[in-house]
Every structure is written in C-alpha cells, then in structure tokens.
Length: 213
Image (cartoon, rainbow, N blue to C red; front, side, top):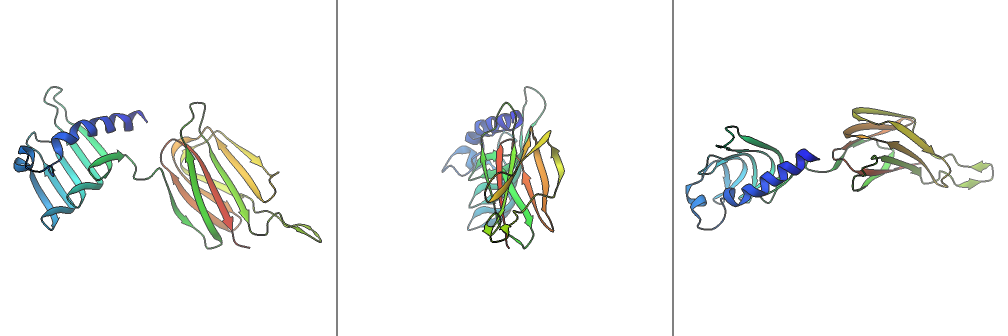
C-alpha cells in the first residue's frame, strides 16, 4: 500500500512535465516519441521521452498513456532514477494492478460469480466466500435439499491465518478467510467445480458463487 501511494505521488508530480499532448507547449514540441501511431497520435506500444530525459515505455490509447507501462524519472540530485511500473488510464497512474481483483477462470457448473470489496481494515482483512445453488436449502417432502459446500481451497499466492465456517444460512454456506496477506491467487473448489480468482489489492472481499443444479 505504501509502495502504491509513493508511486501515485511521483506519477502525479510528473504529469505536468510529461503530458506531451498539452497543446502548443515547449514539452510537446521537444519531446520525442517512437512507436505505433494512429491518426497522428500514439496508439499501441511506444516510447515517449521528454526534454528532461524522463521516459515512458508502454501502451498508449488516443495519444495518452493507457494500459501497462514503465515510467523512468530522472533524478539528478539523488543520482538514481525512480521507476514507476503499473497501469495507466487516460494519462493517470492507477496502480501496480489494473484491477483490484480478477476472476481468472470458473468451471461450467458455476453459473454466476461476483466479487464485491470494501476498504482495507487495519485489524485484519478477509476474503468471504458465499456459495449457493438454486435448489440448495429448499424444503422437500424428504427433508432439505443439500447446500453446496467448499470442499477445498488452494492459495497459489498469498496466505491466510484462519478459516471460519458458517453453515446456518438458509440458502448458502459461508466461509471466511481471516488475516489474509495480499496479493492472493486462490482456487476454491466445490466438489467437481472450481473457480480461480486473483485478489490483488489489500481490501476486504466477498466472493459470491452460484452453482447450477
């Protein structure tokens, strides 16, 4: 989080010197660009160097930094360059990751999966998994239809301290991973079905999974 904040501050300070698209400025006239273009503007991959020697190497869209890139800021005083790596949107640095989370894959019988998130909690962050099906928990003549359960979980990246299970919900089962260390890439399995999710930023997440009957 500190690294991202510092990177954002550096990027914001640099925008005024590096925005080669500002009309009729000296920076625009003297900056150099090498790379893909469309309609006379940077589009795709390219390298932009300003008069101070600061270099952006990455993606452009409609003449603006957009997508993944690496910004090298010359620091004559310290004698060492500062490098900002991450994602940009309309010339604004948004962070190391393009999105706070991303669903990488899910098997066919998972009909729907959604993620919500809240700001990070100093006392410890969680990933809550809520799993349900259309008929799970419904009453029948022979009793209650079984609710889907989390049968396994694999953290390929990141870690957690403890998992709490709540099975007293009417239509769903809930699993709460506590004191999570991010970034996380995890595979959650529900019998033969599974979903893989990246949780990139330090936040409190809730993953809701709905299985087909």
